[in-house]
Every structure is written in C-alpha cells, then in structure tokens.
Image (cartoon, rainbow, N blue to C red; front, top):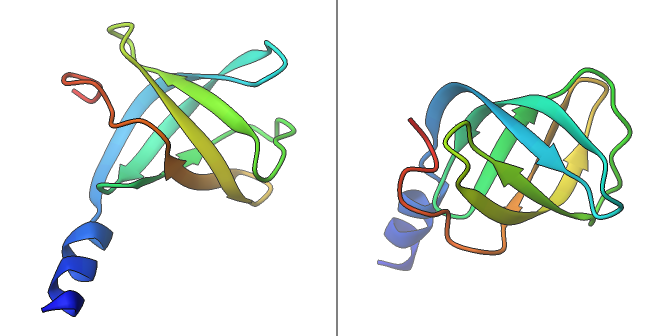
Length: 92
C-alpha cells in the first residue's frame, strides 16, 4: 500500500507552460514548466544560474504563485519540490 502512495506522488503531468521564476535575491526570468507531480516539478531554462537548495517562487501567466526549492540543475533544466501547495489555477 505504501508503494501505491509513492507511485501516485511520483505520477507526473507533462506540460509546456511558460512561467516566471523569481530567485531569492530578486532576479526573475522566464522558464518553461515541463512537468509537475504532487510535490515536484521540472523546468527548462536558458542557462541561467540557479543554486541547488535555493528557495524560489514560480509565477504562472495568471499571476498565481507557489514557493519551491531547487534540488537539481543541468545546463538547461532544473527540478525541485514544492514548498507550498500550488494555488488552484497555477497550471493551465
């Protein structure tokens, strides 16, 4: 049964949604939200510098916000966990 919950939490929804990422020091840049799950996300970026473990805010095109923490980074993608439950309407 515990394995079933883990599968449900790791179930990802593919997206291709532009969002704004706000860093902890106030910088903002456009990224693409590639997928989400109940507690995590993956974004595509254009090589911007991101800190692992940094707390960021993701802002949808509707202006809804959710706090998140970066957990991994590559040259053009990053992923992490949600610290807040995304507001209703965060994704399209």
